[in-house]
Image 1: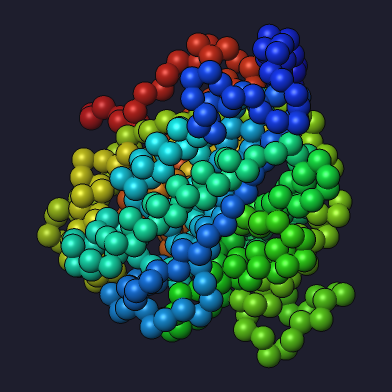
Image 2: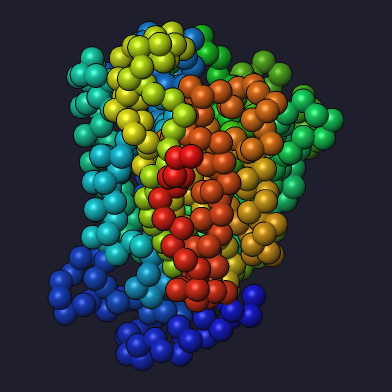
Length: 465
């Protein structure tokens, strides 16, 4: 884009001329925190870290309302959090992938954001894989389970820890990217002959200057719901299998970033050419191995990205809702769909509307990221990509909070799961608003429009008739 090239030229031309050697950052005179270091702006920098976040005690499982408040029975496979910090000069973004159903609640996210800001991170994307075999994360569960409160504090400490580790370990790197259309997902909502479907499979390969693996990133939209609902053990589902396999094969740390999967499920092929899959393996393991094989193939084709500024934008938006959880009828209905203790969270969360985060970033001339705090239907992501142009845009679902489904306006009259008020509580058109807002920010960040050219759209609060 001409505007973006102009912005990048101006930012480079006016960069500080004496940032020191390209081999190491220069310490600021103010203090020595990672965010205060002056990083040379002639290359990307990256650092990654990983930690186990499996709950130390049993709690209700997140994801399937039919399970109610039945507690987990143990651990099928461990849950992990993985962090990747990417820098260019003194600007940085951070990606955290979680083997959880949703990100931490807003109060916990505030603590993680504070740590990110301290580390010089301008945009933070905390992305849950959306496994349905992680612990319930909603606010304190009406004080019903003290272990949930303890896990919240444990999780914040662990995420702040890997953020700090990743930021401290930053080193010069190259970033390569590849993408391919696949048939590895399906639209589970739309029964039309040719429903919307985002089959893009995108990978990033982050290497040190010596060619050592720092991180691998996989972005693909599909629900991790292949472990049976009747299995009450903690599990990262197919996304965890994929990441573990890639870490063994590729080295470094592998992050899975969920996409706009509100209406997309895995499409598991029975046979895969060139891949010997044990026929008696569970479905989630088979699909995880298939995904790892596809990612490995794309890593070998990845093209090096041009270096350039890393810029981010965060904001909070107040959204109107179409349900009143304090209404006794609504509370009873939600309590039957989920369970009463969980409804107390929604009663607090949605009182008078809901405040949702929106996160946007660009990586040089090559890549845009948009974080949505819930499950957008895939047509939102497809439209955003077509409107923004040739620069790839990755929509990250279940990012920085969780406000349930954001269906398209076209999907609402069709009905079905993901469109009902109790799991899509915001008013019709919310998804369109959020993605329009994201597009404005992307154009501002790339310099395609001046920062003051587009008016501030304000909070999403239509006036009454």
